Image 1 (spheres, helix red, strand yellow):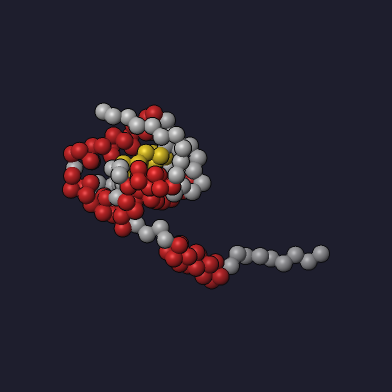
Image 2: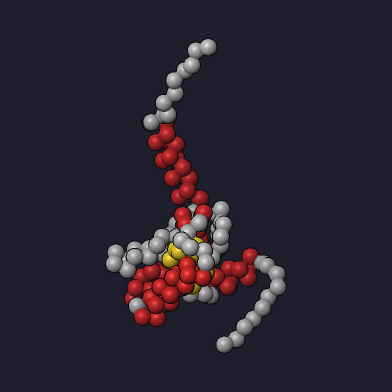
Length: 140
């Protein structure tokens, strides 16, 4: 039961807070990219995010039956959505220790490096060249 407040922002403090947490809650209504959820996974902090923009793309929904995923996503950006994500995260953290450890391990194995992104872009460009869009030349 202690509360601390810090007014201001530094990247160093951001990383320390994320790295020292078990769960990162990001209920952003709009997030074109988002870096904290990627930092979190790198540090083994499990993200609970609103499924929007880059948050939706970079967090894999946890599936306890398939033992896959790296966090929780919720579709509704309201109190019910946040409750859904946090309840499942906290339940897993408290009651399913082995599943939580595996979840943390998977999150830390995610590769958000530029080299991985560049390889994916090259795959997309190769695919686009193999199957160019149909274009009919119009004569005037």
